[in-house]
Image (cartoon, rainbow, N blue to C red; front, side, top):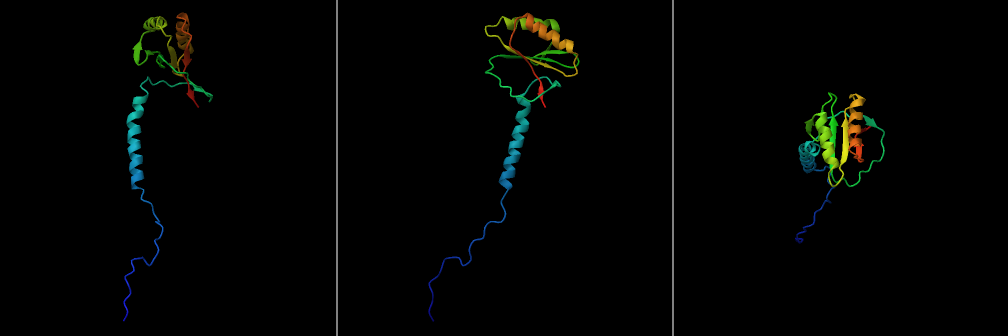
Length: 141
């Protein structure tokens, strides 16, 4: 009786893996979801205003150095950044901004349900102080 040398090769070929292990992918997706849920509210700390719609167009912002945001809520309340101000105080803040070394860019955010006269009053205050760089924020639809 003749003995054969031990053969360490597998007799059957390896089959392709039929199912993928998606557990690491799901862990990654949940981790990213948690990160985005935490950071998204921190990215935009501004007053909630229901902005009017605008047709979609390419709006490229230049390098903005100093930006001041004026928001007007539907109730008629004025905000300078996140601080609520009266109309007279807003005029004073615009006068101070016009005296700065570098002219700030004014972003005007007004609620769509607001009376148009309130927006015109703020634009008049901006013009009175010779602030030429201002934008009216809208939502893209």
